Length: 195
Image (tube, rainbow, N blue to C red; front, side, top):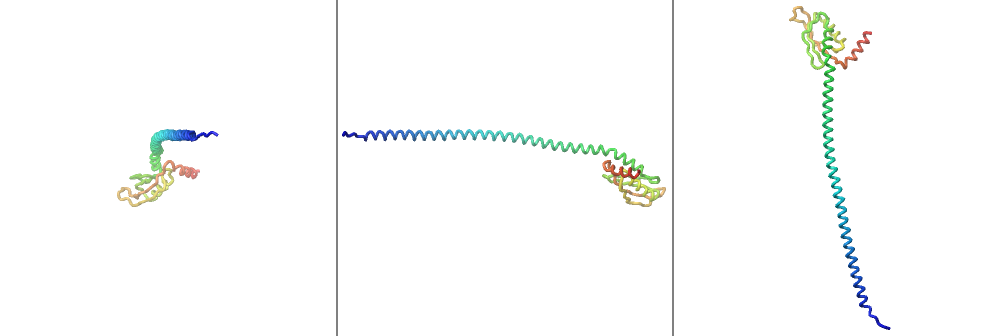
């Protein structure tokens, strides 16, 4: 039988396999590097896109904050205007009250009573005057209590009038004034009493 030396062929096969393995390993390393670079590029692109979205959201948030501040400013101005309108409306409603109050005072003063001073502070009215007798003062108080525009007369001082040539009693009377809003109940009460 002939002898064939297979050592060089095996050596060539080993060399060829080493070259193929080196090429495969190099291709795998190159593929891994390419895959890592591609992943890095993809993630960098996603991060940039997310940062751009975040920047857009931040700019929109700043715009909305400015609009909210404008809305709050408008709400504040609206409330101030409504408060002014309510004050003007209250003044408009109370404008005729002084006329009604003076008319009620004139109707309440009985014969023999003379008023010397009227002072109003808020809803309180101070009436100073001279009466021929204390019964005239009590008549004045009853007339005030029956009035629609005045209520709760309180007699502070009654004394003999020394400075008056006709004599009589000097008095100081405190009265609560009743506005148009609260006078409706008293109107109804007097109308029922009149019926």
